[in-house]
Length: 102
Image (cartoon, rainbow, N blue to C red; front, top):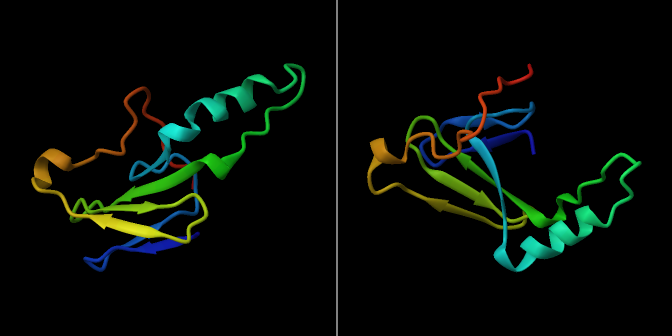
């Protein structure tokens, strides 16, 4: 997916890494299966993370709307914030500040 259209009209790009308005989620039912799969990989080989577990979340920088996509991108659900200011930057990293690689 390269571009996402928010309900407010803003177009969000998904064509680079370290996007501050993008996050990923994993269903609680899949959480331990994902870690079992990662831990079972050979430690001397390059890891092959299976992205099938992850859905994407985008937050519009203008209206703070959350757009949640299923892992297969067949479903999208939008959530408007109750308090726009308090919901800002909910997808930003809590650990490190990496910049987009454009």
